[in-house]
Amino acid sequence: MTHDIHEVLHRVFGYPGFLGHQQAVIEHTVAGGDSLVLMPTGGGKSLCYQIPAIVREGMGVVVSPLIALMRDQVEGLRQAGVRAACLNSTLTWREVQEVEAAALSGALDLLYVAPERLLGERTLELLSRIRLALFAIDEAHCVSQWGHDFRPEYLQLSALHDRFPAVPRIALTATADEPTRREIVRRLGLGRAARFVSGFDRPNIRYAVVPKNRARQQLLRFLEERHRGHAGIVYCLSRRRVDDTAAWLRGEGIDALPYHAGLSGETRQRHQDRFQREEGVVMVATVAFGMGIDKPDVRFVAHLDLPKSIEAYYQETGRAGRDGEPADAWMVYGLQEVVTLRHMVENSEAGEARKRVELRKLDAMLGYCELATCRRRTLLSYFGEDLPEDCGNCDNCLTPVTTWDATEAARKAMSCVSRTGQRFGAAYLIDVLRGRDTERIRRFGHDRLPTYGVGADLGPFEWRSVFRQLVARGLLSVDVEGYGSIRLTGDSRPVLRGDVEVLMRRDVRPTPRKSRRQRGETGSPPDPATWDEALWEALRKRRTELASAQGVPPYVIFHDSTLREMIAHRPRTPDDFSRLSGVGDTKLHRYGADFLGVIAAHEGDSAPG
Ligand code: ADP
Ligand code: ZN
Image 1: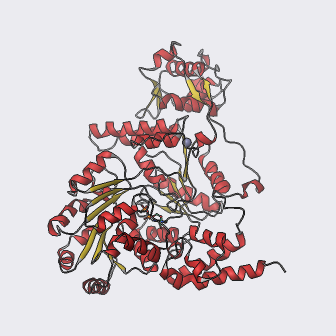
Image 2: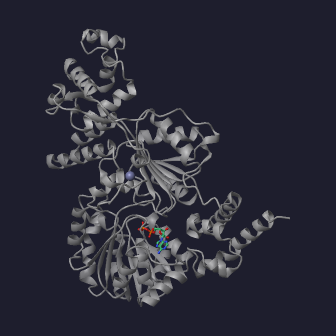
Image 3: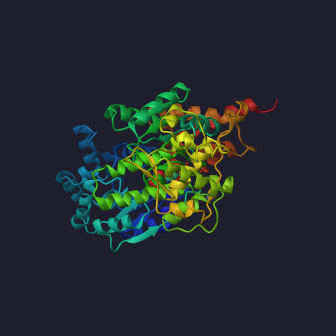
């Protein structure tokens, strides 16, 4: 058996070895055991059920919540020569019948099914007439009612076991927290299943948070400096901001598209398709753009607004770099968002207990933003994982944060809050502190307060940082009903009295834009010894041609990492080509000559003499 699974890994998928728990999960499933697999995004969950479905007798059934995701998985499998199909609501009657006939005649290794379809009597009846290799329940956290991806149909999946007790089941998810795990086990009746829990670290993702200071300009700069021509996602809180940001980016020459629940289903589909199938599309989206993203080469996830919780943040940023290549999780944040988000929570329909939980989660998120230490350590510890040392790949590790004694500044800020009656937002308070001469300040007579002008030594950027950090630590609070007016809290007094010292992180004001020449570099520098930009472009061009001729996304032909291997190893023969990671028999057969041709032509061009 061990022999079989390795053989399939090499021959079909073209990979040299297994990753993480893959081999253990696959062996367990091939032997007929149930399992619960928790692996981070990009950890390689799909192979965990695809290989057993191929090796075991019969057809594997995969329950997957999203049609777009299903379609691309099936396409990817077919490219590798695996006999796969799907059943969902986008098929015509005729297509459904063809798929059913193929399943009945034993011509399928894998069948992907939407949950509502699976539990219909017609499908259950069909399955009862077929030899089944396994059931895989992908995105198993959709069964959790507290989770953000809850799908009511998932609750009924427990029926599978009752109806097909002898068929092994494998539930998979990238959602890490313990309550969700327990709920999956309980609702799917997996109490006796083996658990395979991987570390949730995503070392190839670089985490960074920057204080908001003209967010769009900051975003543009980030894109120009690190991600020219790369595919990525920009998350915003509201539909309007999505539309505005996408339009603005397009005006700046970036191939950006909007995505939110207010667009028609057809527009959303079209945008998702372009994102998925073309290279270098930037999707500006609300969280409505989520689970269905199965694109391995998303190079960055940017947040222009604060996510609601660390879980949501980790899941959203986790969509970057599934292929294991360097990727960025980048966020700008400011005090205004805290006000907006709190307001949303407090005015939601949720019960009091739920609101308290959500506010606590928001506070944890704030704490994360204001960290002065390794961000990855904090993120992982939130999921119960200990990183023995700092990661070296987050902003705080790369540019260590300095702190400053902000005791005086904090007292001035608090005193200003108190003397103006706890009725004003940070922008106004900063004007008073800095002694600005405005009509509004004169009208309220605040130019006669003792705190007027006492903060002229700091600029607006520094003051915003002070207020943000005071709020993040609960030393001041924001009254969401009073339009963001800042108030004192129980913890303010000792600071005001000068009894405690306040140390703050020193936020660095963004520097002016770099020159064009300096902006040329990209996020993931390839190995300079073998890198060849012209060959890279030629290989990508060939891949795009092959993909569009078949109407499939380029990465189902070959991932970027396989193209990079072609550049590093310059294969000359089919035998050389078959040794590249990501080249299985079918792909060698279908595309080997094409790409070998591109490489040979290029070598001819660049050969000396
Ligand atoms: P997940 O579903 O856990 O997010 P995928 O199954 O999509 O992850 O796999 C993530 C990436 O890793 C894909 O690009 C896949 O081709 C690649 N991959 C999976 N298993 C292996 C392996 N054993 N060797 C090399 N690459 C792998
Ligand atoms: Zn770090």
